[in-house]
Image (cartoon, rainbow, N blue to C red):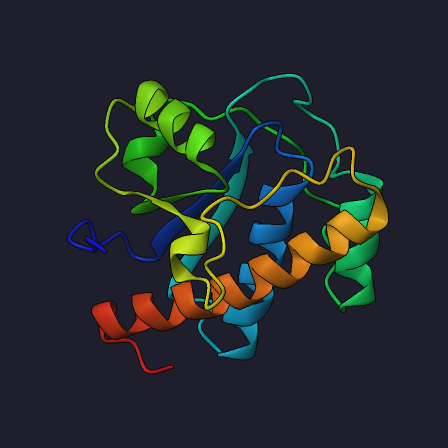
Length: 166
């Protein structure tokens, strides 16, 4: 991962399609893991979508439910659309699937700092985090587990590269 662009704090942006299911979970899980590590002053975390359908809306109720079951409150998050300037504001942009990755490159003008979240997953049966929008609560549970273990390894990688004690 290229961590040459060193914002202080280091910016991580999670991106999915509508910013109500997967990327809010990424943001919430990442914030929680950063807090547990005592690194809140080292990172800035946000999320957004490549589409504008849900701008201003809170995360999907099932995203909120599965996060809450795991001690994470994402209810105050509001969906927003990815903007070209996000490419400058964030050191890395984390796409939930390959389609999101292509859309991010189109919107911000580069894919040099765009990574798929599941590049960091210990179970790489697929590089895409499936969209749970139509899959019922079990789909949200599965996505939570994928995102949780992927974010842990993402943070391990970033801490190593940025020489931040884990």
